[in-house]
Length: 448
Image 1 (cartoon, rainbow, N blue to C red):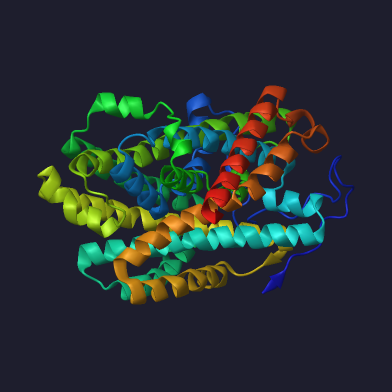
Image 2 (cartoon, rainbow, N blue to C red; image 1 turned 180 degrees about the horizontal axis):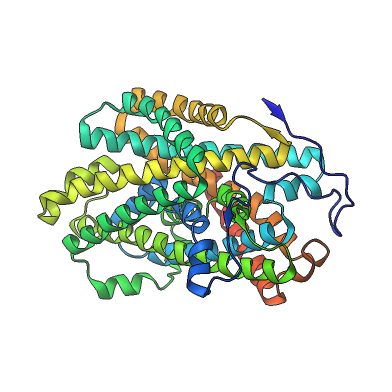
């Protein structure tokens, strides 16, 4: 274990109590050059990558559980929730890029500078809980995929997922760009699998289009609202806000006002395009579930049950195999970014750094213990409920990441000339308020 060195002794920038902290994710910070002379498209390619690492968290196995439950129980109705959640994600991730590039701080470092030590400790614990909940979803999803493809028992599959730390260490040792290439390749694999699934399912496209229009029924029906907030928690990932504000700093851009402004623009384009791919995949999961199960009266919340039914219902033997392959790719992809998020959060809040492999093993152990217990005692049905619950936990933690992010990016004293425009600040606070209200309603419905 290594304690972080003290901050540099130069004078603190306006709006901050401390001078610029040590680089976020130091082994990768400013390691990917962006030459000045590049044209627009080549420069966009140089900046592309961090958005896709962020997008991975928006299509992890936790999304599958909530999307399957939503599609099979309520048809296409909750497509509007996926769309709105994705638009919220695009907005919030653009704020993360703005914060990281303009200030040289990730969100955790900014919180440590702004809030008192007790508040930071609470925020850190809440974020660690969210990371563990997300990691739990990845563990269970990967274990289910291994079971479906190779017949590996659930408990053994859960334990095997701990080995992915070796892949993470190998990729980060090679270069950060290698990590991005692997992530994008797996996203393309998942997207291709679900494009085929949609062709097999032949959904009613008019009904799909109507599903993107918000319905007041979502707020009136507690069961539908529970799934909707689970989708929100699975789509807008709290730890992704910390992750994105750090990894945008892997690009070596000019640290001048013009250079930062250009970096913010390209990073925003990168994350927006990447998150549109996440929108397609999340919507595709729900559409396939609605087309295959809802019309036939099948309520499917278990991933393995969906795998079992897809081929006979869609009349394509390949459908179930593609489903399982996409699930495995999604679960393994998510583990790569979970490692980075955990490291960034711990270093940022505590100024404390663990070696990445040790940090990953600790996170994995915390996720594996409840997954092994539930898999042993309750089998597949229990793991399905645990998946949905993990996404609701993520949603409940979300305001504690969103509010500081909007607070910092709306502050001229902290952001200087890169402060969010008034319209963007107003929209950001509206999104934060919607998230808080939905979470309060969920708690009230759950308790009462």
